[in-house]
Image (tube, rainbow, N blue to C red):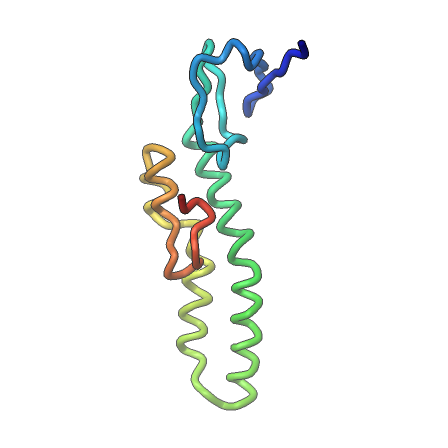
Length: 123
């Protein structure tokens, strides 16, 4: 039989057969912290992972808005709505709901679908 080890965010290892409890959700695996035989998520590390995911998702959305902006400028039409949408995308990682999230469920709920589209954390 081959031993399988789980490594947490700070490099601590534990044999998977020794784990008494671990998160069922692996989206924030990079935020796992081993405490004895229990694996928990470090909310600060999870917030950083969440913000990185926002940045990943918003990149192509910003690029689309840049194209829309150029077309609007060339056509001489209003760019107000485009600029507002770009601002919302830029501000998304700084949303107060992210910093106030006290657990993973609250963090997932902080995904702003009106700005970023469908959540990658939707069940």
